Length: 192
Image (cartoon, rainbow, N blue to C red):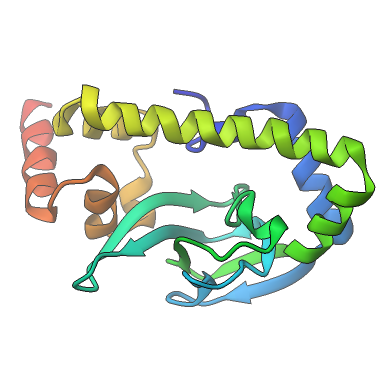
């Protein structure tokens, strides 16, 4: 696991590129807990650099139950990457968990930049490869690691997640029930 929760940000070149783009082209927007940064079924309006706060990527099953697919927080980036740049509707929602300040660049503007600049297209391709690798690794871990192993890996690298996200969101992200997560936490605590 890399130094960043979302390993795409381990690339200094990618991190610098998107940070600079948001600083140069972005507008500061504020989101309160529960506000949607992206609404499933709509084109994501922005690509954002999170200056403060935390968000979660979610989808809903047929009964309306929320499932957390990803977590993003301070110094991370948020969008429906790369689909928003081509005007495709989002397959998920992104919801603020805490108050958030985000430098937002309109997705349409990035789409224009892709068409105008071959270097921008190369950066999109490199970023997409990193995001795909991160998602693929997480998907593989669902099959190769037990729930306990996924939990231990998560807290060994990111012990402060419980200070940012509610237990139910972390449980959903790990694909276990909140009760199971509470038992894992208690088991680990008792071993210390």
